Amino acid sequence: MSAPSMTLYYNAASPFARKVLVLLRETSQVDRITLKAVALTPVSPDAEVCANNPSGKIPALRLADDNVIHDSRVILEYLDQQHVGNPLIPKEGSARWRRLTLASLADAVTDAALLIRYETFLRPAEKHWTEWLDGQREKIARSLAYFENEAVTELSSHFDVAAISVACALGYLDFRQPDLGWRSTYPRLASWYYEVSQRPSMVETQPTV
Ligand code: BEZ
Image 1 (tube, protein in one colour):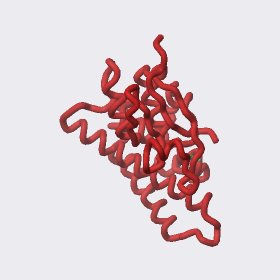
Image 2 (tube, helix red, strand yellow):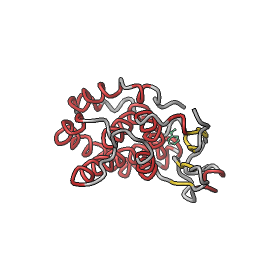
Image 3 (tube, protein in one colour):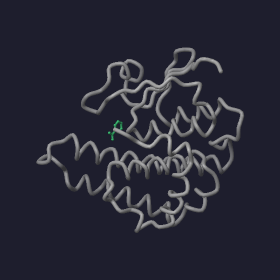
């Protein structure tokens, strides 16, 4: 086994970093990466991350040639071109745009869940913007309803970029909004999620503080 050639800036609670960790496992590339854990929020960024990614966001991946790439979508695309197994992002055709669109909708769920987390955890209670929080929750509800009614069969077909993104979004909802109770409203999605949650790549990357 050769020494890791890339460094991933990540946080064990980050759902976007989790997508990368899951894909690394699904494509047998874990040994190529050194993990660099960073603690950060939008109001207290990490200096080293900012020096590598001006947005201050994780995940960011330092490549063997010292270039740094970000965000999770770009990193997934890069890593999916670095292994010899079946691609987890279709390379062309309508499947590519469909799977990336499902992944993008999942990322919108994750974005909304993160915004809710920041608003409710970082901002003083008297400053919470209720209508804005409701807007984020409605975004999540519309998206989960779409996955339930229009996409769950497609998601079941293989554990690729779309499925990984939806699974990590749902995992983050469970982690930070455990009282949401989405399973009773979206039972087919819940059943799909139960299945994919058993995968070693998901078990080994469960979010932690
Ligand atoms: C969280 O604690 O929820 C979190 C931490 C880092 C990045 C994203 C989320």
